[in-house]
Every structure is written in structure tokens, then in C-alpha cells.
Image 1: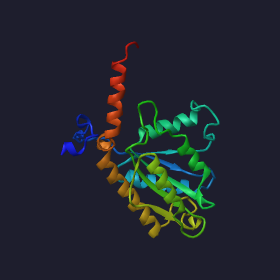
Image 2: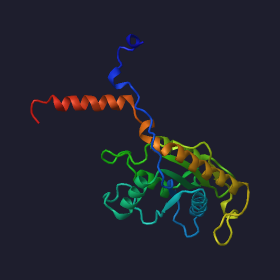
Image 3: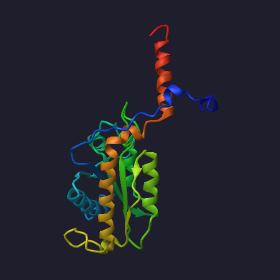
Image 4: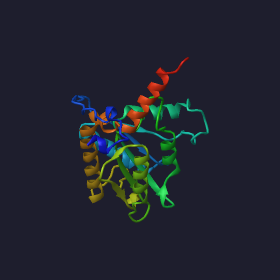
Length: 233
């Protein structure tokens, strides 16, 4: 078979074995929302999701985007940027929720993702982590934002779960205390959070195995060879 693959470096082709360890701590889920309004429905939906996640056995953190500068407008040492990046690294899974504005996710939400780099030195903060996507709508139900969030999740190299939530006329779905009313939309949120916890439990100890790539093993080997063979360092 190897003679049919002359361009393949067989020494780097063997797939590493899957991890056999099993973490005992609760799944760590970060929740992001996309509005700084006092009565933000994306925040209320995220808070409802956090309650459900904790019921399913996860530990949660919710990032407040208020005070986060525009991307590249301040150095990365800004406290809000550092807070966000530390939470991203802490997480094993995430929930993204944005309102739909002019057919797209809000600028508040996109700014958060733009502050998260694909790589921080040798670390890839989001690669291999699970993701659930949700949106709130001011009018009839739409899926523009959740579709866009799925694209973002792919670019951030995350595993986006199949289920999702879109809540139409969100102003009708929450009571005066900010709790989501019973409805099929609430039941869908329950389904999404349950699914996220299950996928996170399945994948969190296998992230390194799942994202290990032949091309990167080859590149690393070539870089090592070039460094070792340098006449002077």
C-alpha cells in the first residue's frame, strides 16, 4: 500500500492512540452573550442556560462584555481582554448567544470573538472545544445568527453540536424577574444544554487526539530537523 502513496512520510503517518484518562472535575462551560443593554435578552437567555448547565452537572462562567474595547483599539494587556482570554482557556465548552441586528450577529458579540486568537504561543485556546449556539430575535424566528455562529465556530476550530436555539419575539418569552417562561422554546434550550454537556464529556479528554494532524506533525519534524542541522545557532 505504501508504494501507492509516494509523497507520504510514513514515519509521521501513524495516528497517536486516543487518550484513556477520564477527568473527574465538572465540565467547564463559558457563556458569551452579545448585548450590553440593561435588559439584554441574550444575557437573560445565557443566564437561563447557565442554570440548566449547572443542573446537568457543569460549572459555568458568564463573561460580561461591558467595557470590552473594540478589537485592536487597546493593547491585549487590557483587563477585560485578559479576563476574556483567561476564561476561554479555562473552558472545555462554550455557549454563544447573540441578538440578531440587521440580519447578523451584534458587534458586541463579534468583538468578543475577535479578541480571541487562534493561537497564544503554543496554546490554541478554542481548538477542540465544544460549542452550542443560540440567538434571540426581536421579531419572527430567524436562523441568520446561529448560522453565522457556526461559521465562526468552524474558524475557531471548535466542535459545534448539532442542536441550536433561536428564540423569536424574545421580549415575550421572559417574565419581569428575567426568567424564561415555559414554552417549546424553553424546552429547546434544555435540549441544547443537555446535548452540550454530553458532547463535552465525550470529547474533553480526547481533544489532543482529535486535532492531531499529519501536516502539523510533518511541519514540526521539518522544523526540528532544520534547527538541529544549523551550522551555527
